[in-house]
Length: 285
Image (cartoon, rainbow, N blue to C red):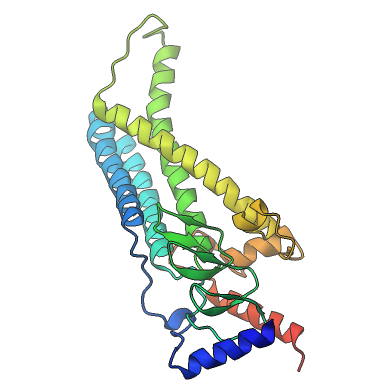
């Protein structure tokens, strides 16, 4: 089978099919999916509108400068990190196999859709129209696949969305609990919050549930070193590393630091060294 793959790939390359540059040499990555673009825009609209309503209808009316400034700065810092993580997830190549990829030592199959020799743990995405290494799933909210090279950014995106959602829920819930503790209202009291406050609550609740589900799923995938696809189909070819801690470091970076929480930091160099060592171990010659 592999020899047939090699012959087919060689003939295609002779016919003029060339591979695009790999890794960081690729200039830009963007998936032209109308539904995904709509969902990605909706994510930004929800976060930015929540920031506006939070300041206008919750922080400014409090008449407490320290309270308003502190919570405003914390929320906008977390929201900025969430949006930047969203951008990095959306615009980073998740680990696509080059079109017309020639067979190599790690080739296990051939993809007839993107005409490429496919390495182990690479799966084809019908939306991206490419085979993606360690393809966890295609997320419409970031208009991209979550794969080997952007999993950290998606993990940070879900983390910061969860934090800003929790922040809003606390800002809405604590005053209500304090009012109830002071006896200002009871079960017979009627509550009619403004539309903007109700919007904040619903968006925060939706963001919290989304982040909870996705963050737990991603941490489970990282700990076991298995993608969602592999866990659903019980793929036995993927084997975990020596420890869960090593799996986390492979995604977030080789050294524990604040860079783990930064969407501006890329752990690609660590991954490249790791793949190089793995290949040398497989092929001593």
